[in-house]
Length: 395
Ligand SMILES: *Cc1c(COP(=O)(O)O)cnc(C)c1O
Image (tube, rainbow, N blue to C red; front, side, top):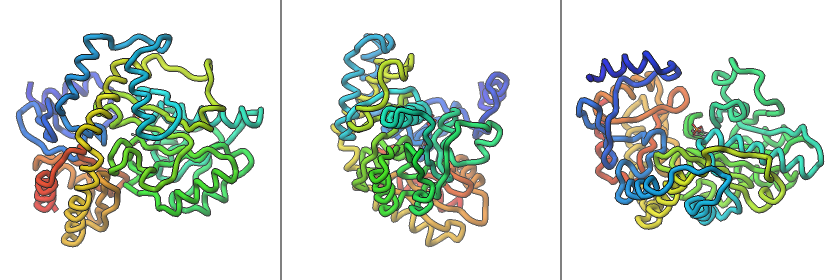
């Protein structure tokens, strides 16, 4: 079936909640994708910061296949070896205390919010606590995660959402401080805002929020769903700041293509929050997803993926900075590691993305005017050169 017919057939059955790009992807190899008509694309989107090991990375498929041949699902009523292995991998990487596995990022946020509420409930003996979230944030599409997402366009049709959420200005410590009251139980933010347009937290802001949380016994929830798992050159972006969360969420690249997320708690949050009966999931933490998590960590360690990101970041940043210098429509570069955004002015970012796709480069947007680059973490200098070569022609 040609791509056009495939697209038509898809639109017959699938609810139209995405304006998809007019391409039907068929397979991947390394950091390249191929559509069903055989055209090759350099992938600088990685399935929205998911496919950090690209496609068919040595050892990854084999790890999954091995687990499929044993057991893919059993339920959280029982223990499995992959569950404990994945849990300890995540704790070693984060130096945190306990893990709860989910199927997605939004579910990790839901769990983190419940854990924070339960912590405050345990501490004070009553409910009705509040959460401070950030403007221009993104935490997911479920009702709970949407309640802390600072984007009116996403929220409005679904009001009222979960109550007790106040929005502060990101990177503005005073605006956070002014919203704190005796009901505040948690502050949630992305260490690097993704969907909102690639905005890293400033050191002063993150340190200041941590201090406020300590002063008022408020839990700090850092959403590392997009910026975590090596994307900034650290397992988790907060490790670059030396600021520790009480609860962290992760997903996207955690399974490098297998749907899995988690919320991770420090000792304080774990010791006085969720207990049996408080939270659950059918699929979360199943042996297949957990085998993927362990395999990802094993490969990251074996092939020193974090060191590679740190080493190549200056080269990527320099290449992008040169686009800022040479093209008037590229106003600014923002980001950390392999999570980079180019702010575009004077023309719609969508037109650039479509032209890139046409030219064999997959990139995506963030916010209204940012070209987002979140490639697989295994790209080399040659791939950076290939990407800038294509963007130069388009711009
Ligand atoms: C993608 C994302 C989410 C939601 O994850 P899903 O798996 O799509 O539910 C939450 N927070 C951040 C920062 C994200 O980038």
